[in-house]
Image (cartoon, rainbow, N blue to C red; front, side, top):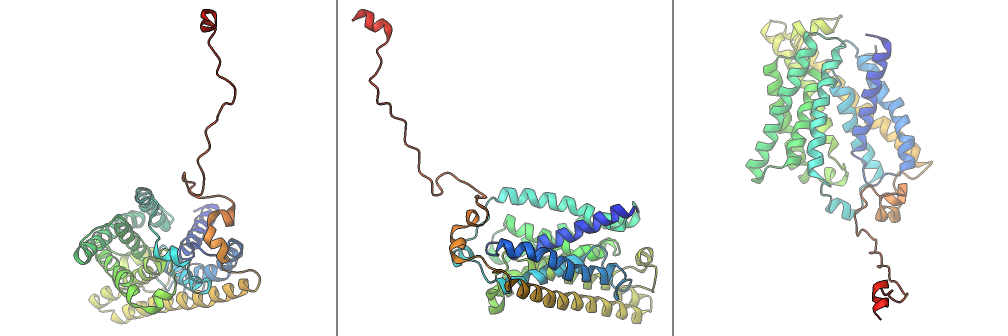
Length: 355
């Protein structure tokens, strides 16, 4: 493919990653600190992981990461959680009362996201090929299965289904299939959807509420659960279900095979080696993002405050940007007084003639 297209595609991946990370920091990070954080994190954290796995680094041609389960989603989830630890939590009343502003808009945005992921995964083969077609099909299979599992668990344990829960299940399915979209069969994609709907649901809805550590770190949009957990699961399951015939079309060096096919074909050692690479890749991305993100946050904290001051947190958007995201009528405004005319009433001309 033309180099310009490849550069733009990778640029979009990098931009998406830092946007995902921002979901962990909403509602309290100093905007000046954020403007410093973005170029530093993209340069010294994201780029290192992307180069190590995709660009010729020490994990290149070893890790199965078709479209960024480790490079994008695991890194954004871990880095977001780490940055949220250093920045600190939102204002107490924001944490206690943080309802969605418009669920209809959430649903519409989720639809656009799901549709766009077709290009995200389908385009990662860099060619109009069978791999691209399989990646698109697997993306929809895994995502729909994950959504159904998440909503089913909500109904079983909470007796209610919700749009927000359905969207969370959709996201975890999209994330989970990303590292293996073009290298697993469709039945495996459906199984990955079951896992991606169940495990992140448990970590978010059960483990998060029981863990003092998770409660201490204010991950605003639960990016750790929807992206780090789901991305790690996708990478590990890709190492389990990846099909050798499909892998040979993408990887030019080494004898890649998923652990399951390695056992079936009598090549268990190759499958175990691949699984060890997947686990090593997940560990590397996790550790690197914790260390690099912590260093960047501590460096920025020496220059500007990472966190908005309490007075600005009370005011909100207008304190940081001089404008309100939602200027609803009555939010601190007064009704204008009606215009009162002080001049005497004018008598119509015909009435004056009669007088």
